[in-house]
Amino acid sequence: MKHQQRGISFIGLLFVGGVLACIGVLTAEVVPTLIEFQAITKAASKATEGNTVAEVRSIFDKAAAVDDIKSISGKDLEVTKEGDKTVVAFAYTREIHMAGPAYLLLKYNGRSK
Image (cartoon, rainbow, N blue to C red; front, side):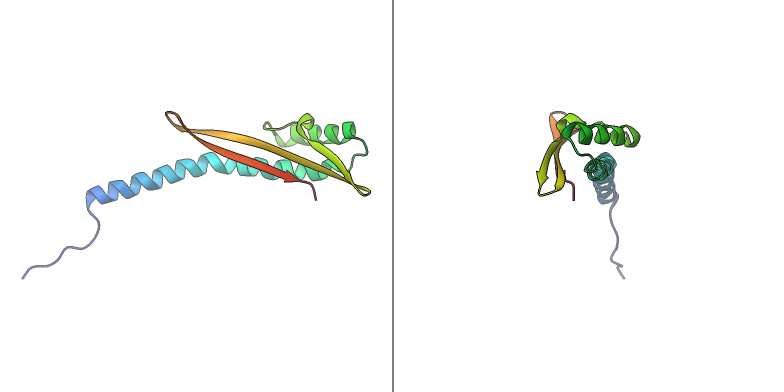
């Protein structure tokens, strides 16, 4: 009697392993940018304690030095007033080199609460 084989072939296993490896590398590149975005959002919220634009940018720069934020600085912030509340907005992009001429472009923007 013939028994039908089950499972994945070696070529299929290599293909699945390659796809999982690519996803793992991509994840390892993207996660630090997400962590930095959270740090920028936290620093922007903290910067709203300032009363003047220069003070807000100074507070942000100090928080950026502590959290090792390199993508954006205080001069890149858009500081506005809404009523009696200071609002800090920001936007920036990050490029991640994939292979050859291929890049992954991540656009981040946010504002204080």
